[in-house]
Structures are given as C-alpha cells and as structure tokens.
Image 1: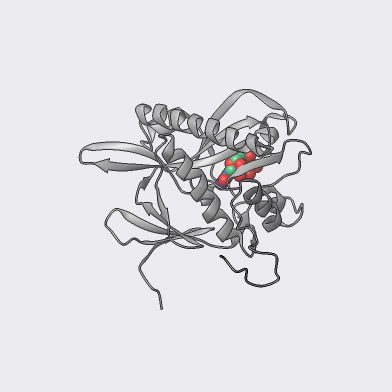
Image 2 (image 1 turned 60 degrees about the horizontal axis):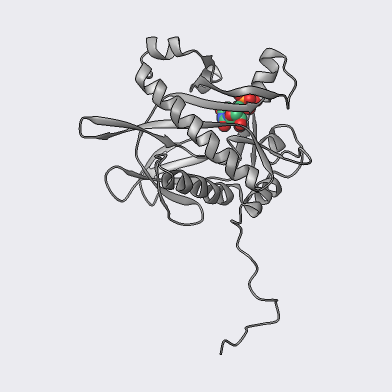
Length: 253
Ligand code: UDP
C-alpha cells in the first residue's frame, strides 16, 4: 500500500506529496532509460548516487545564490523539494560538441565550442523532445521573452558552477540538461532550477583520459554505469569512507 500520495512518476524519479503545502518528496529510482525509453535497465544503486550528487550540486548552487528547488535530503533515496510549475523545456548547455549537436551539424565529438551554447527542447516524449527555437517558445506561450532571458542567465551560472566543480576533480563538463520551474511569492514569480543535476543529465569526461563517466556509459554500452557514477561521487568526496581497519572496535580514551 502506498505510504503517501504519488503525484507523478517519471522514468527515473517519483514525486510524492510533501509534508507541507508547497513541498514534494522526490524519490530517485534505480531505473535507467535511453533513446526515449527504448532502452531500459535497472542499475542497482543509481538512485542513491544521484540523490546524493544532486543534493551536493543543488546545495552548492543555493549557497552561491542560484535558486533551486532543493530543500533537504531526507534519506538515501529521497529529498524534500519545493513544488514548482515546470516549464516544459529541457534547457541544454554545451561546452564541447557531443551527442545530438555532433550528429546534427557533423561536428566531431570532443570539439570545443567557441562559447557555451544554450539550446531548448520541448519536453514531449511522444515527439522525442524536439529542438525548438525561442520563437516557438514565445509563440506557443511556454515561456515569455523575460523568462527566457532569466533561464539563459540561470543556465550559464549553473554551467560556470558545475564546470568549476568538475574541473576541480579532473572532469570536463561537456554538456548538461536542466529543467526550470516557476514558484510564486504572491503575485511575484521566480524561476528556479528544478528536477535533478546528476550524471544522468550531464556528459562528464575524465580530463586526462577522456573516459566517459555519465549516462553515455549506459547509452553506448561502455561498461558498468554504477561504477562510473561511483567514481564521480568518490572524486567529489561524497562516498562514505570505510571506518576503522576491520580489526574490531577501537577504544576511545
Ligand atoms: N539530456 C538529458 N535528457 C534528455 C536529453 C538530453 O538529460 O532527455 C542531456 C544529456 O545527458 C546530455 C545533454 O543533455 O548531457 C545533451 O544531450 P544531447 O542533446 O546531445 O542528446 P543525446 O545525444 O543524449 O540524445
């Protein structure tokens, strides 16, 4: 029997009603999907790793003044978040060509881009999340010009923050996707980073070897996805350290 009301179930996460109005509980599943859910698997431990990593990135963003939906982590798989009205866009920032931009424009993967490029896809699984222009977004009322200016500014701040964090642990942030939500303070609306930031939604390459440490490991059958995510979490100092030396309890004087 359900412990509480399920609000929404997506491919990798479930949202439940939160304890206070305006809050939700976000539960991270172990399910992995790719190619619009044509490829699926359950990867033990992925949800725990993504919950912890998303907490780490969102907490850092909140601290430097980039607003996010994150309130606090509740347990291994769940975090308390602000309820937002999701803007139906995937906001993608690219530093290096890879994936769809490489295919679309014939740019070799790994080519640095002249500057960070922000692009938008319309969130619709049935349509395969098609790339859309700002004209489409404004004409169809998904966001206003002011919203778009704010979204681009948010996305570029997330890019600088995440690039720096990753660089510090020997990883290149190739690209990533965020989602943005609206929250209302009375009549006043604000846009905040929502959903998750994790190796499911970023491309992360080892700076020296180019080894892929993100969901491409699953998409392209390059090895064990949980191992790749554990490597990222380890470098970020997020994995619990083994306590003691295995010889039994130590007396504290
Ligand atoms: N991405 C995502 N969800 C999506 C589509 C893309 O998280 O539904 C992320 C993806 O992991 C990558 C970036 O956005 O870090 C750019 O993805 P791209 O457009 O190259 O698409 P892909 O090659 O993954 O189909």
